[in-house]
Image 1 (spheres, protein in one colour):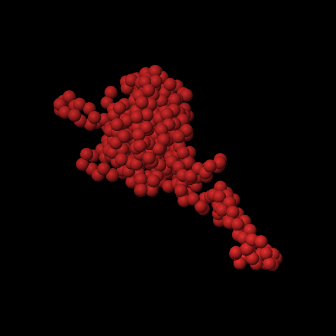
Image 2 (cartoon, protein in one colour; image 1 turned 90 degrees about the vertical axis):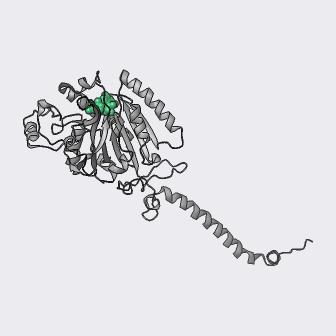
Length: 365
Ligand SMILES: Nc1nc2c(ncn2[C@@H]2O[C@H](COP(=O)(O)OP(=O)(O)O)[C@@H](O)[C@H]2O)c(=O)[nH]1
Ligand SMILES: [Mg+2]
């Protein structure tokens, strides 16, 4: 007969009943171990239990995708828009409606110092022949960057489903009589772009027109540092001054303004569906325009409260858009598109600001 070496096995052979206790204990321990690790996994999915729910477990705003997880949880309470955006890893969505692709615009985007992995880009290109050309150039530029390591978090390119003006020449698109139609189309394009790209983890939206070809490299850091719901840079243009025989700058965007008594008076006399657009002599509102407040020697951080904004370079806290601020394509308090947007922001209870001494530059046709 084989000699049993282990004292435990010898004991089991002699008195089998004494083995029941340790074996039971072992089985119970194994059972408890597997049960607890299983429930740990369950807990990350469940948000029923207050103590162990998803929203208490995860500090990350962007949750890890667990295999087989078909439910995404985003805690908007933890999604912040702070003046320390880069440090806090806040995502910025840069949105540009684009009827033309300017290489200078793209080069400027590439030199922005805000961490690229925290930037998402969104474009909407009109359904025109000009749009076809812009789309091709944009796709080529995007591909070159997105195949490199230092790439943007995401790039979305949309093709517009609404109409655009036939002529995009400056003279034609700035004629007063086409403004209502043109600005309404632009509003539709901006809304499509916004509502398709705003993500659950977007902290900031930077509206940057695709013909803004020069900004400070620290544009995002500079604008977020003001910690305002909406803040607009001052849009100027470089040009050659024939009289002075030198390069100079001049104001370009007149849509950043402060409401005036005259502006309110004009609005009061309008039919429901009529609009006021700023920057036309035919509609003299005498509104103080931010473009005229630029002081080359002034503090670059000077802020001024605004009632209307343009879309050239405007930073918006994503929650302002989430609350419903969009670009009216219809007369809203006799305002439309970006100017109507500023009005809507104010009606939602937020303030709108501009930086008169902080310049960005528009392409010169
Ligand atoms: N998607 C789209 N973008 C447009 C359209 N028209 C102009 N844009 C873009 O919208 C921005 C503002 O338009 P723009 O014509 O430059 O306005 P302006 O600077 O005030 O004359 C620019 O980035 C244009 O490229 C359009 O019909 N569709
Ligand atoms: Mg422009």
